[in-house]
Image (cartoon, rainbow, N blue to C red; front, side, top):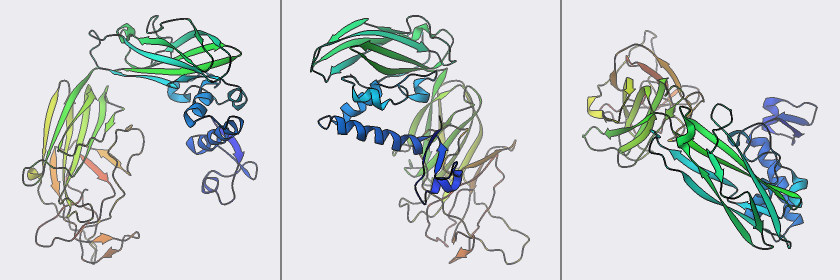
Length: 395
């Protein structure tokens, strides 16, 4: 949802998106939502200076206006400051997460969580409770997928009252994915909205990755990317990490590309390079264990026809080790796929490029591409030259 608001002088975002009309800009996202919600909280704090931050958040969340979107898109709804000021009943927690129910679902068990209503006022309030649930396709969830333990509850002044909320993912049939619900409690001239969600996992398996350095020992210094390209995995991207060199991800059935850089050294300020190892075709159809072994990497060099060409490499930004969508940019990656066979590559940086591409210090390859099914471009930490032994950097 776009919001139009006044633009501060010298605002960098306004310089990018432009102002319309002059002095105002219209954008969406956290850059616009955050200051508005913060302002709403400030107004509420003026009205109720004794409230804690959790009570302020509870009132803002409970008094929202619902829309056609799901909790994944709008949370509990749209902030209504005028309603929040008079709100005396809030929900704890402000939302309910039922986590992930792993595939297969024949052995799923109902999961129940308590939703507690707190009355900050001086009068008892009786609430009438209803719920609506949506499946991953935007349709109504099957009857019984989310249920309430009671349809009415009385919350005493200054006290609390609870009701159970239960989800039963066995009722999802063949529809896997994220299910959501709203629990709406009305009474005493106010409404309390609470969002709930559960992930009904699609067919998935454990993929265990083991990373070994050049000495054949478990490595704590690596960057791994597991990108889905087909089947249920088509929209998946994992960047797993565990310090002991072994990590397990829960991956949907399908085809993946796995590529890894195992760093040489232990200090980010003195890495001497990395061994780049790619597996362009990985079909996940069962629990799988893969060992990524830096000892299989081979040195890679390249010559170019231009005389006087400098050899250097460009250091990157800090790598992300979180799971993110393959459709979004992540960590400055660019990716291409070819039909070339699997390969392991090793490269030897001995100097860094400046921001303009001019090398500083000794000469090393600025850019070299091994014959690989995956080509990539990425930022990288600084390195210390190691002229006596070929060091490595990621392609």
